[in-house]
Amino acid sequence: MRIGLVSDTYTPQVNGVTTVVRRIVSLLRAQGHEALVVAPRYPATDGPPDLRVLRIPSLPLPLYPDIRMSLPPFRQVGDFFDAAPPDVVHVHTEGALGLAGRRYALRRGVPLVTSFHTNFPEYSRHYGVGFLESAVWRWLQWFHRPARVTLTPGEAIRDDLMRRGLPHAALWGRGVDPQFFHPGRRDPAWRRWLAGGDDTLIVLHVGRLAHEKNLGVLIEAWRQAYHALGQRATFVVAGEGPEARRITSCLPFVRLLGFLPREDLATLYATADVSVFPSDTETCGLVALEAMASGSAVIAADAGGFRESIRAGATGLLVPAHEPRGYRDAIVALANDSAARFALAAGARDYAVSRDVAAENAELLDRYAALADADQRRRSTTCAA
Image (cartoon, rainbow, N blue to C red):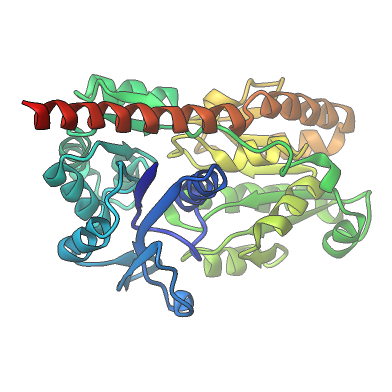
């Protein structure tokens, strides 16, 4: 098979969408299929060209340079895919590049798959433009309606999409690789570097450092936890984004590590004792699953996709999304009760193993193949007629 993948975010950018797209590219190529990618060009991607990847010139979004802007490259995408026509086009984002991929598939009659990764209507509230929520939903409904299937990683958001007139919404993308994210990666050298020894609790947050991730609540919760625990805990953040400077100024005791390669990130998860995720806009919460697979006890917002991964008191702790005191109390409780912390970590690991990506990978390949075969039969019937 030859699959066209279109995304408004890609390497070297690190986020949930990029992680999923990279996973699909690796899967396809490992199984002997061809993956053709349309993605933005970043300053760091200037180098030897990959003929299987079309990089579209882009500019950083003002005030949020991690997000890139492009004009819809209809002609470039058409020429790129026409040179090696895909059997299926899978569009992962609803921006300018996604729009070009969507248009190509519909005009050429190629089966269109879309993904709903990001809850942009919820984001509008975080950025003070909640009045745009209904308009955002209308755009998303229009964008995804022609797809043969719209994949999304959360049951709640799938059901919401179906209620909003997208009956072809389906679950996919909720898996984690429990062999890569594994407690065996725990590293005493990293503990000494971050905490000084095994007696100090490492409290970790991983993610994009942006306003919609509810970081104001995290900042206040960690400030309170630091006053309660003092030198008994060290607080660590892995990630980049526009809120990094705010975290540094408000929490001078925090170790801000910035972007980490995935190998190092897996080591960090396994070395940490507690991972905290306050975002209330996650469709899945893949970072929580990665931490759980790594044997870290998880504290997360009682919202969105976290509710589908965490059984409170068994595989992690859920707290009200916007109450810093709840996160603070949970951190302090786990710091003072190592047995409870270890039990949560063990339960989290067991659950994460049940969400192994292997089954999902096979399902996606089967879905692509079924769409491609059905389209081929349709074209044959049309030609014969």
